[in-house]
Length: 167
Image (cartoon, rainbow, N blue to C red; front, top):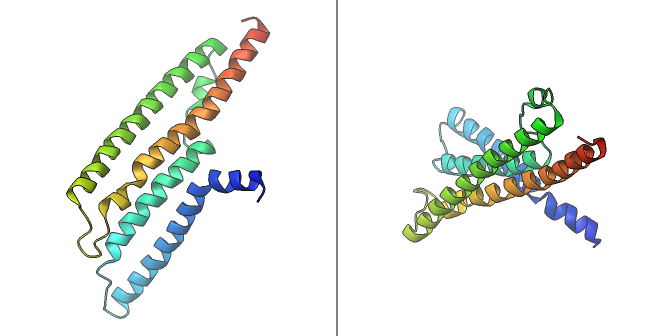
């Protein structure tokens, strides 16, 4: 396989897993509704699987959203300031987002470690809770990487423009 193809596959693995999880979530939810309301025979295990799939979709989707700059931002406000102020605001925003993602990653890692220590699992299917919630620290790290790389590239470009303009 070509290195570029492998890089694209690995680089979009979060999207692929999130898409599969979303499709399974939709199918299972539909089947759950049919079984509950048409056949009066609900799946008892469905809620556990839905929660796990929803977590995986939300957190892996967030990772991809950072990569494609699809999160909400207030660019219009920042763009009204001079270039120097824009860079300072960008640095401040980067620090806040990075701190938040670091905090999320550390606290969720602690939670997963506790699940591993206590051998906690779901009550019906006995799915290890660490498997379900393990996506959170992984996604926090991916979100930080997907936020940092374009940020540093943009910062370098902004500083280069400032230097070229003699500001």
